[in-house]
Length: 293
Image (cartoon, rainbow, N blue to C red; front, side):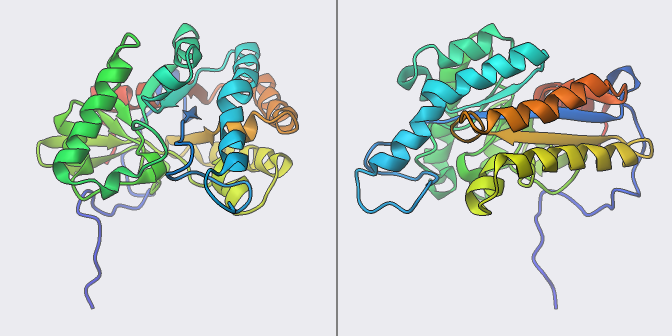
């Protein structure tokens, strides 16, 4: 039997690859992807705290909107205090819908990566021309914040068969949709290569808390255990851990303390093998030195 495999990359076990360092001789790159998302009121897609009874779904819309109005600012305080860099995974519609939120990310020096226009739609359902137009609108809107984005995370990790091709043609250097590795890998496109930077669907608060009904204490323990395991491996090979956060989840008052405790412990341990970085900096290093597989 012949199985279908993704045409974008070839299989190569992580134990059978060239070794290399991150900048400064670091071995484990840790980056935080903080999702700044907006949703349609009365229609469209969205994570649910509990099943909706009807539209307008006031309960779930308001729960998600709490993240932009309150939760994001709690996470700003935490990351400011710990002096942690972050990649802001930004819906372009945040700029108009939540005045000051995108600007607060820019003021902190966060990298801005594109995350579609909103999280009320999945781009993989669009036609070729519609998807190309969506990418162009998103790129232009986020470029207005001061710098053209170079990385893309699809809303709902939704891709069409054309997505990597369209992104490369639009000038994107890296993509975050593929959670298939602990190292950056190259994806082929019609016009060249684009870097896949690891973005975890495991160390990610939506699957951990919404899908699996976990809580912040367990999620914090997952972060601690993942870092410990990767540190035990990273002397043999360079690794990446992307930690995905959503302010409407981890910005809730009862969830910030467990997250703060594990991040404080990691910062205080000051393991010199860890590179606290952004997704874009990882991609830049791979591209500059032609690393990855």
